[in-house]
Image 1 (cartoon, rainbow, N blue to C red):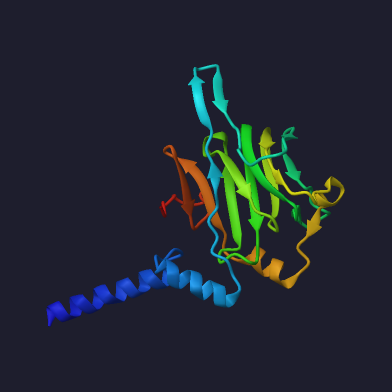
Image 2: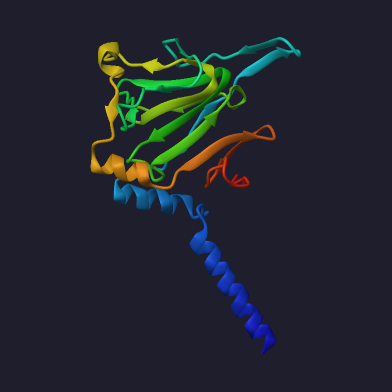
Length: 214
């Protein structure tokens, strides 16, 4: 009787854990197939690492090249800044149709917010620093970045196609579609750098103890 009760309790805990889990390992092929039927793509963020040649207490020398890049942009935040800035109380985002971003933090730290309704996980928040490498932002992804009091400098090495037009690619956009609003309100996946590893967590690392998902 005791063994049966104990087994039931363990089974109940297992069901509760599965129910509350924000990250379940399932058959990858099945997940991709289900998402295909839903018209949703399985999202895997990509970070392109830097190659550090030499580092001393006062000097860091590294290769930051992106092989496929055909552009080089520097974005400087002097102190607290949001790019693009809010329009009164409304958040604004950039979205590119002919450019894939590869953002590398040179100095400071910058928080990136990515929104894409076509992803199975449509809302990501990345606390990006240099050690994480260059964050890739795919075409069609709404994104904004935020710096703290110390500001930050980011090098973006984008891949642009022949239809790229700077007059059209950098127009701030609001989340004015139901799919975008729903994606913004969904639980975000957070990305941080800790113990020399990029970690993905299912809750705000600034508010709770971090639990590594992989």
